[in-house]
Image (cartoon, rainbow, N blue to C red; front, side, top):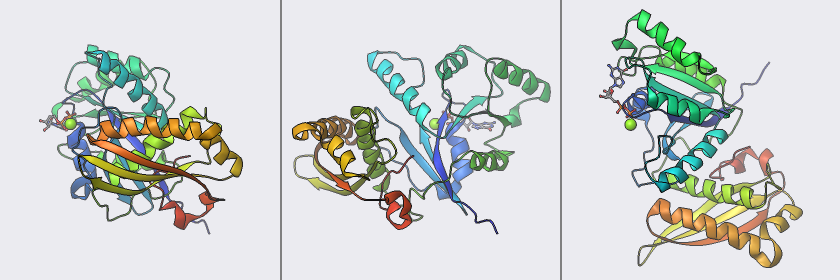
Length: 299
Ligand code: GDP
Ligand code: MG
């Protein structure tokens, strides 16, 4: 007898404004939209919603900054966005099937060059187009690059959206339930903060400890004077990895903490006091129960 695996992963929804990204997400997740953080999140992915299935979980994230930059910060955000697109499990590139192929789409396609993440081309607003028009539009897109799947949908009527979801599941790796089923509202920020720390740790250590690293944000507390106290732990599997993360005289950990804190402050719009520590926890990846503890576990 084969045991059914639990699948989970991060899916980034990209596309020009007004193509129907939000409508599509609402259609797919429906009233089950468990989380929506309305705080401005300037530099990182915004977690939009979680879809819980019988044997898996999809975390939909919005990747701001894919559009043509209008200013310097835009350029920076673009780089961050592109990096994050390389890290998600799947990209849904949503386009308006009732609109002509234009310069905005050229720009996004150029941005996607060199990204190996599977990409679904989602042609939305199917209810507004004739078949002939749809076929020639699909040609226009697919002649520019290969897509993992090409799926016409209507977010408005729901046509073909279930098919899209079933295909999404197929491209997710085996993984933990990142979010509890009864999501509470401060969870997405915790997860995001954990992700920030993890990103800094991996980057600063030049990925010397790649798969063995998890971050859990244990405590988030509002303090006076617009300060937020955050206590977070970096978990590794071996003492040697712990030594790398801590660094000479604790310098590595200081750098990681300081960079993560700056991003958290941008995320939360307040000052952050970050209490960051490192702990060795052998074989945490095997310990399913403990996985739930981790805000972000990504391999
Ligand atoms: P976003 O900017 O990409 O998030 O786009 P929105 O979800 O806000 O949708 C932009 C507009 O397109 C809204 O007026 C939606 O009602 C409309 N829209 C979205 N999906 C569809 C669709 O499948 N069919 C039609 N006819 N309109 C849609
Ligand atoms: Mg929107």
